[in-house]
Image (cartoon, rainbow, N blue to C red; front, side):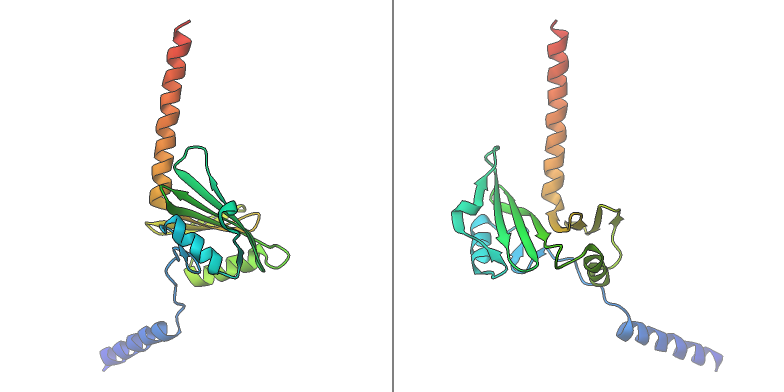
Length: 178
């Protein structure tokens, strides 16, 4: 009899967690209809159709110096002041949304994101971030929200380390030549 009561209490507790527990959402891979990994032309089309962005066409698109990167910088409406969409090899790998701090505050944004996505993996006065194996979403100061493709970011980071190491070796060889 005692085991049946224990089993009933455990079952009741499980159901209460299922129905009344906080559900944690999966991290989004972008904002609204714009997702990391999209090609440049698709993002342009989505920006043109989205009423939160003042996309003006090609004049908002820049080619960055290394020729494989593009940037779309666009003014926002309402809660978004400005947004940046960064591409490498024609694919979107980073989204930065700068918020209007007269309409939103860091604390409210943090609370909303924590309730929706759970406890952050990184927490500091300057930045709070949520991550999974493929992306990082970070809330930063001044108030901005960033989405980052970690695979692309880590590849860029590795490349910059290799470039820095090669520079250092070249520098040492140059100095030794004197």
